[in-house]
Length: 63
View 1 (cartoon, rainbow, N blue to C red):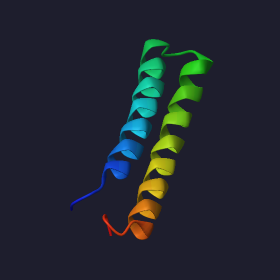
View 2 (view 1 turned 90 degrees about the vertical axis):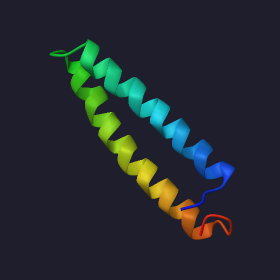
View 3 (view 1 turned 180 degrees about the vertical axis):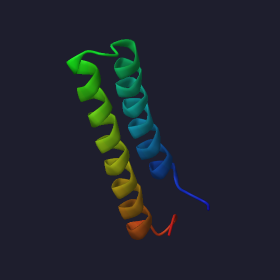
């Protein structure tokens, strides 16, 4: 699927945040902050999917 520059930018921003949250969760395993980071990473993945799906639906270049 061919995508536009905006799609790539949106995806990279979300992936950076997910990586940060997942790394924090791994570094602080067993602590409450790790559990919180893991939950935030999971919800960020869902938000990314919604954002990219919405973008593809609206973007004439991607859709």
